[in-house]
Image (cartoon, rainbow, N blue to C red; front, side, top):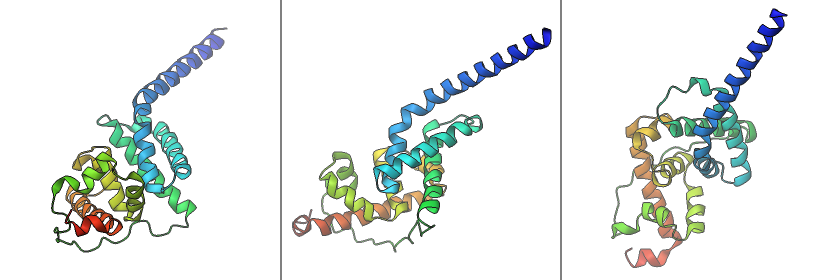
Length: 198
């Protein structure tokens, strides 16, 4: 009788611990579901694939939740989303080249004369969002992710460096090149603005 009571008590304790872990995970993870989906959609290029990536990322995050050692949970979670995407694309796209080589830095900033119409303002103001989304998809993946994490998710350079697993200086360089590349793509899609010196 005592053995049966001990077994039942042990099972109850395990169930309570599991329920508590699940509740803590949901409290931390669910507020960042939109950010996770947003990152996955920009990386994958479509909603259906993004949903697969996010589902896998959340399963991984829950599986490894005990390894989370505090700090910024959103950064930890977005790192998992990015890694899930990289694994997903290897499995579903035959490991095609994910990150294109970075083009040489172009210091010609004469394309736009006024600061308020730069790519950050375009992202934040959602000016011609459909065109902007198409142009963003033409950027190399490493540019898209840093632009999204900085301009949409408002993460610091240090946080982005943790997520993309590169030094902070590399993040800053990629962000600068991404802005310039997006600016050029925007002007090529809107020649009247380029002609007016915008």
